[in-house]
Amino acid sequence: MPNETFSLRRFRWQLTRKHLVVVGVGNTLKGDDAFGPMLIERLLKANVPIDCFDCGVAPENYLTKIAACRPDVIFIIDTLDFGGAPGELAVFNTEELTEGGISTHGMSLRLFAQFLRACANPDIFFIGVQPKSLFLNEPIQKEVAASLEILEREIKALFTPLDPENPAFPSAQ
Image (cartoon, rainbow, N blue to C red; front, side, top):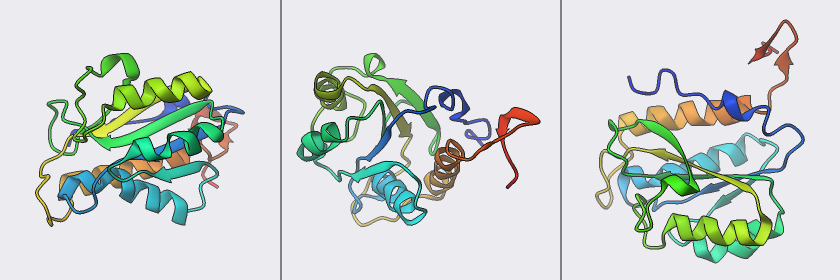
């Protein structure tokens, strides 16, 4: 399983006293491309203390709303074709995305990130899942669904108090 070791722990210290915004991008009618919006829906239902935006297939329509939050850190969640195994999760920074992009969407996510950086100057990270299927009216594939659960758990863990006995791990509370 490609995601057994996927973790966002490296962001825990970077997010201390910082404002995180999570942006989901994707088309809920195209199989695995629903990954970003599905994650946002789950985070909103769980009342995680962050601003979340389901931008669908038009993230450019949310630029000013996201910038108005004055985020310190932005996670952009999307289906990205980076050549991994289906369902594999990976984190990229803006510079790692090519101008044409590895996104499955029309607007370059790199251009989207450049605009956000110009408006609010946040640290921006892309968290992508490798799709298996992007066909219209198909459900999300099991590999990608498993990664959705992993990423949801990892984002929630960023806001779980640390165990004082072992600060590398969230407490069992």
